[in-house]
Image (tube, rainbow, N blue to C red; front, side, top):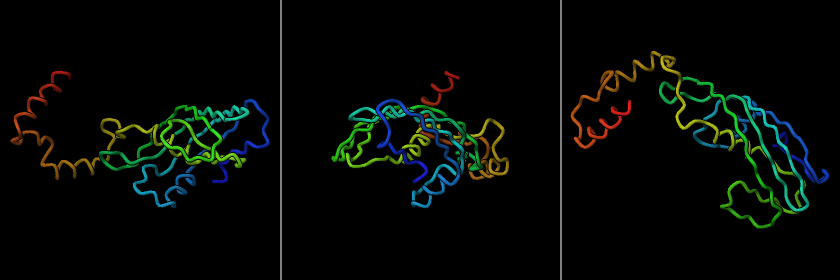
Length: 176
């Protein structure tokens, strides 16, 4: 994406600051690429990038914070999630397309810019919690009633189950 390209060829050796903002159009662009199971519907995330340009590599220190809209894992209603984080990415100049090195990107030596959009997209997704749910009592009450109806009532744990699982359930009860 053109808005997220960082042109480094004309920069002097040393540190440089860049600011980017991710909004709804950013997420729509990734949806248009055909990425299935899109988690994020909307959002606004600010990225501050400090580029330390060296003779033979680039060091990107990326700081970000903002909020994104995702589906609640329980009621499927829209949920606003605050995210923030930081990451250091090393940009090495190489014609080889090497995989497996964490936090390293390879840039062909003839390139004069790098597109940060994919990196921003991944950082946002990594900042999301593994389970996104509303605070207690904030879920859509209609959906909660439907879930209870299809789940056989409020507490369906009274059904006959494998006794080995009951022992494991008792372990969790002791911790609470």
